[in-house]
Image (cartoon, rainbow, N blue to C red; front, side):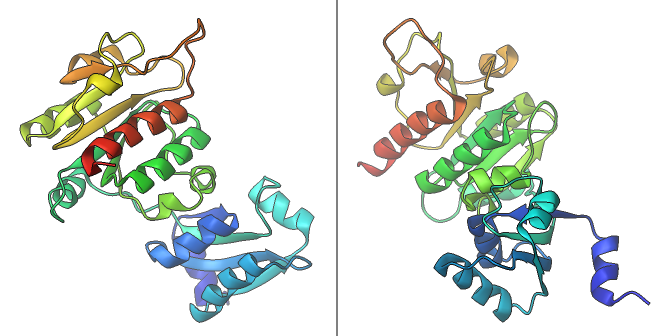
Length: 258
């Protein structure tokens, strides 16, 4: 007869989180259910030992594997010797993000990601947003990467702490934000107004477009204003996560008088 632990794994949808930071931060955030930890049996480091101390305290079963076995399970050699079988990422509702953004004494500060398809870009944007004080992140249901383990790895575990909502219609979400008194600013390399000439204080949502085409035309049309990042040279190809970092930290500077 299978154990209760194994029955739970089969009955509940799970995924394999990998890397020291994602596993550690998921343990600290306590928003996922942990079923099993996998570690490389011949690997040891101070960081790994600190993570395993959390695992031991949480009484999570640990299985030791060879390097090749762990690589086969995670399908990557960037697992840093540890992986965890966990419940899927806990998505947040848009209403919760709006409620959270209105609490705490600070003006709402929300990030909308329109058609980001690379998990590494999603992870990098989530990491920057977390550091910049963004209260919630919104992605569309279609034509967008979700909060997969590769995104958590790229975010250095920040994904485990942020509130992420997936919406069916980004335009309707923008309309909802505007009805709540939140200004919506989109990024567009062809916009005449420079990022540094824009007021990014007060209730604000920033829209960052996808890697190839940027913000979709209809999404851009419904923004309150569009802004561009000044740059020299003929090459107009700032990476989506780099562009997002520049915009978010200019907003951070203005909002917190840095």
